[in-house]
Image 1 (cartoon, rainbow, N blue to C red):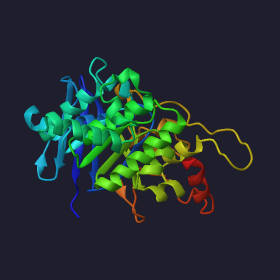
Image 2: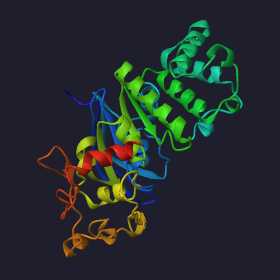
Image 3: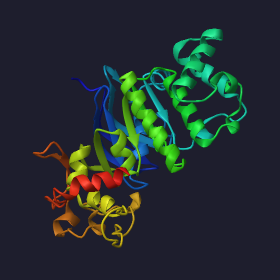
Image 4: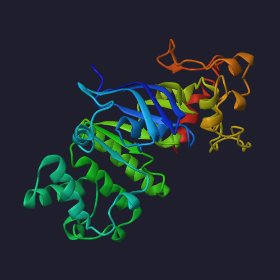
Length: 333
C-alpha cells in the first residue's frame, strides 16, 4: 500500500538556528501515528512546516508529498486547497482557535462553504450533522450560541467538527486533550478513535501523554531535540523501549500497582537549539553515554524487530517481558 503522506529530510531553522534536523516520516491511509517527546522536541514544528504554517522567518527544506501532490515549496494558493480539505489540524487550546465574536454555527458553515461549496440550508443541515457526530447535545438549539457558551470539552468537539467539514484524508491533532480534565480527555480520545474508524481517516496524534498515544495510535515516533530517535509499533515500544530517552519517559510515569518507589526523572532539560552537543543531543542526560556519543550523532536505522533506532548503546531487553504488558496497562489508566 502506498503512503498517504511522505516526509523526507525535513529541516527547519529559525533565524538561522536549526530546530529540525532531517525528519523522515510516513503515514499510510487510515493509519494512526503518534509523535511523543518533551516540549521543545519539534513535534508541532514538524507538521506546521509540512503544511506551510510557519512564519516567514523560518527556513524550511526537504520534501513533503501528499499522494501525488508535492507540498514542499508550493504556493499558498495550492496549500490552501490542501489545508482544511485533504489535511485538517486541531490544536490544544480550542478557545483560542474559535472566533469569540462569531456564532459557532456560522463558523461551521464558513468551513463547509470554503471546503465543500455548501451554502444556505445545505450548509446548516451538514453543520448540524457534524455537531451531532462529535457529540454536541441539542445541536439545533445551540447552533446560534457563541464559543464562550460551551465548555472546554465541547469547544474541542466543535473544533473537531470544523476539521471534519472538509472530509480530510488526514487529521493532525496537536495536543488536543492537554487543556481538558481527565474525564473529558478520555471522551475526546474515544471520539477521535471512533471517527477515524468510521471515516477511514488517517490520524497523527501529537502529545507528551504516553497513555493517550497508546490509546489511539498504532505506531509511535519518539522525538528529541529535532530528531526522531526511536519509532515502531505501540506494543513494541511499550513492552521494550530500546532508546534510553524512550525508557526515561516511561520511568518518569508513576506506577499504580506494586510498592511505592520514587519516580526516576530524566536529569536536565532539552538542549537549547543554539547550543546543541556536537554528537548525540541526548548524551549529556544519558547514563549510558560513552565518548563516541559525544563525537557522533547517531542515525535512525531500521532494526530487526520492526522498529527504527538512533542510539549507539541501546537498552536491549531492558523491560522484562512480564513487566511490559503490565506497565502498558498502567500507562493506559
